[in-house]
Length: 251
Image (cartoon, rainbow, N blue to C red):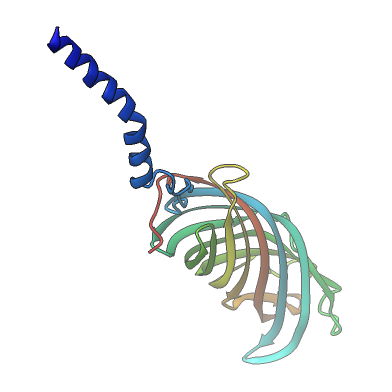
């Protein structure tokens, strides 16, 4: 009987002490001061595809010459157009630094330019952009976990189709290649649609000079046609990223 009373008394004391113990643990284990949950920063590592709008401004400097002597030069041959651009690439994040490679293809239907020749060699010369692509690398710094400022450089190629030359001149499509440089800012838009981003960038295509032989003078002479091209572009692109769902340290 005495043993039973002792056991009951122990259980009663334990029950009375439990709230005090719980309160003490709650107080001293800092449960009250627990940090609020913070969404981890998204990783920039992974592949992406994107589509957007692109505005091109192209300028040509045409030089006609024969035997090493230039006899006509046409500056100010320029035009602009707005179209679409598609991009694909991959990025790698290393702390606050992001590096990547990519490929842009300009879906602009035509960037056309025209000019009347004061020397009477042709009436109106029109150039239409038929193909323009860039393979590039980029390196940037995260100014915030969701905002990247970057520079880019790479190799580009553009093809223009000229019209307006005399029939039988032999002048056809001009294909230019050269260095493409630029930069921009990209912002993650995961709060709107997970895995997406928006980028705004500027590029400058510093093309090498393209030359062709122009058969003129009713076939009795051959003139050299040289074209110096520059294309400046502004792009606004929405990209979808694949991979990189794990949290990343920005240290």
